[in-house]
Length: 249
Image (cartoon, rainbow, N blue to C red; front, side, top):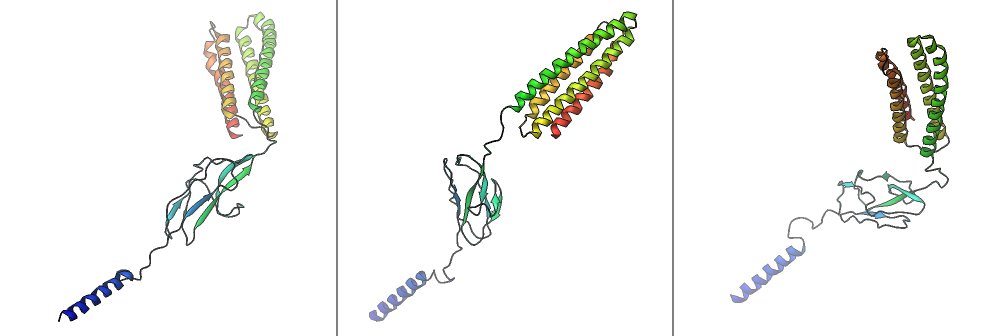
């Protein structure tokens, strides 16, 4: 009797061991395969390529990382990642996503050569100097025209006509100055030089303030002071149109 119980116990243990070895009895013991995303620096000369430690399943969304390791390559700009080393695959930038397939993915850093002959750092200074020179020319011309008007019309006692002629001369010269400045900016761009639009817009607004002050000074103490808003409106419209054109360049 004891021998029968012992044999039975051994058979139960063997059966249990077999079940555990086969995955616990139920199911085929298989698991969902995992896939990885590897980042490759693709010739970087500095920085550290990041490591994605996530194990992805088929169909899982992968978010592409940025250049978190500050990879650099002498003479090149980092422009993103590509699934092929030569850049002919699918390109991704930071934050873009893709769906994991059934194979590991390697993303190669993409590099764009920096143009060594690109002109830099001179256009804004050149434009600033040109505008200052052009505005000074406007002031000289205005002084000459104003003197001629004063000698003729103002001397005859017709103050209204005198002031209106000066206003017309100033308005015309303002438009000439603006046109010259815009032409210079456009030529700078056409020659391949970069421009700082905000700096140019700030310059225009600075000259706008000076021109508006001119009209207030011109009519100061005169009964025709009510003409100032109309004069300044013309000047403001001219500068607003110039700034719109700069933003469109």
